[in-house]
Amino acid sequence: MAPDAALIVIDVQNDFCTGGALAVAGGEEVVPLVNRVARRFPIRVLTQDWHSPDHKSFAASHPGAEAFSVTEMPYGSQVLWPVHCVQGTPGAEFHPELETDMADLVLRKGFRPQVDSYSAFFENDRSTPTGLAGYLRERGVGEVWLAGLATDFCVAYSALDAIALGFRATLLEDACRAIDLDGSLARMTGTMRDQGVRFAVAEECEPA
Ligand code: VGL
Ligand code: ZN
Image (cartoon, rainbow, N blue to C red):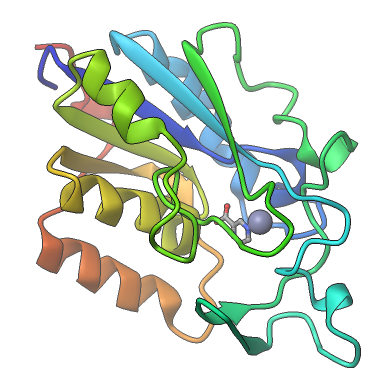
């Protein structure tokens, strides 16, 4: 990795791990890999999906709607999820084995009740910034490496935004797990390749 690299660990939270409200298959398996690579990076950011109890990305906030169906929001299409990562609940906490002391920044996202935020950089309206780009630029970051959950949603959106914002971006494939809803993993992997996201495994991630 380059000396101006940051590791961004996306949403390694209980609700995305086995037994959680929106469990991603094998989600907890990323934890040892993230812990192993994190200290090789000069800058480390953790993100936390952090929803209000009545969040509009929850199927429960749309009477009659089923989880994993798609609805139209003022900002475009939105998958409706089971209630997950509600602010202050155990499901929103980081996985207990994730080493969090190493984090320079914990960035919360998705806290506005009316708009979801897959990406660590922009909410799903694609225009409201989270502030992460400014943080990374002020710290001189040119390159981001991404790990966490879920590959085809929050990790992919973050990687694509990183590229669009002018960062180099590498996805640590073995340190991510996917939801894979209606072919979303293949679709998002293709889009990431097309946009210039690089793919690597944790073993390849050595300091420059
Ligand atoms: C995520 C769906 C809803 C993710 C977050 O972290 O990928 N997916 N909220
Ligand atoms: Zn969410």
